Image (cartoon, rainbow, N blue to C red; front, side):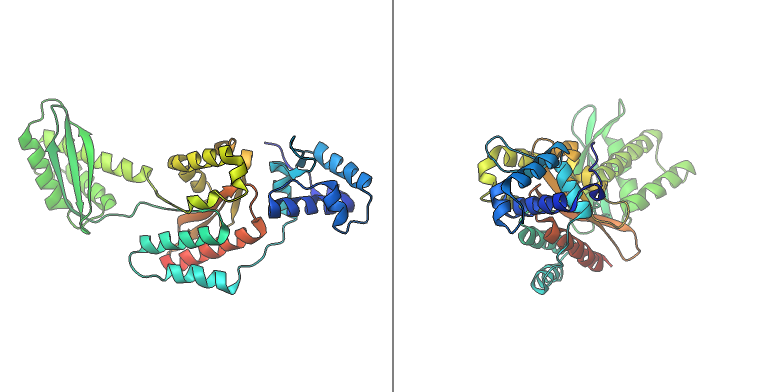
Length: 347
């Protein structure tokens, strides 16, 4: 990945023109031409402005689309602007109030998180994203139902009444009585525990010979718990709200890019992995366009920030995704405030 040149290497004149191009493009979505810049109060001739634009283009900070005489920032130029030139605008009292009202909406924590994400989407004109760990279910019962000669369905019922199923491969020659025995043991021994606690208890009882089950049932119990545990670790909950906001007026001219972005959002596992990389540290992370392989086609940006629970550990990541033409100065502080609100909610 290329790195943006230091701002200090740019002349005051080049820095001013570059900032005006970026501001104009982020505001309008349209490349900015030398004529527009000359009319904007720059005390320079159009020829001098064109010379500076050419220099900025040669540095890789601006590009000139074939269909326009104007210039727009490249991903490298946006990175330089975001890291060194952007002046953030704090959320207004109304924006803060809207986010906090959604977070205080009552009901399950998941509903409050989803509502807060929807508010973030509306305020940023992007799709809102939040990733939280899969909630630890407290078990009520676990049973096995035969599917075929070599497979069974492991049925997990939680204290809140939710039911989840997973297919488990059976050791050869396992009969129906073994399924019943394994299910009876797991329900009796594990009811009232979370999955993580259940796994520790089973491993202890099997290792120390405290479980009154035969070898076949033991193998099935271990296999069933392994399937549940691996699956839970692999599947964080990713909530996406406001995809429709990505179809704004400016985007309709570039529907192919929007389709690519919506396809990216459908590949939730990759988005989850990207958000997961923002968990380290406390700072807001900004991923711009082709800097991230995932968005090489759609030219999208993600702004993400981790938030912590009452014990100080990172419990999730919240953010937005939209075109690289984001109002970064406004959206970054809104994401920061939303992360702080969710941290209070989880505290």
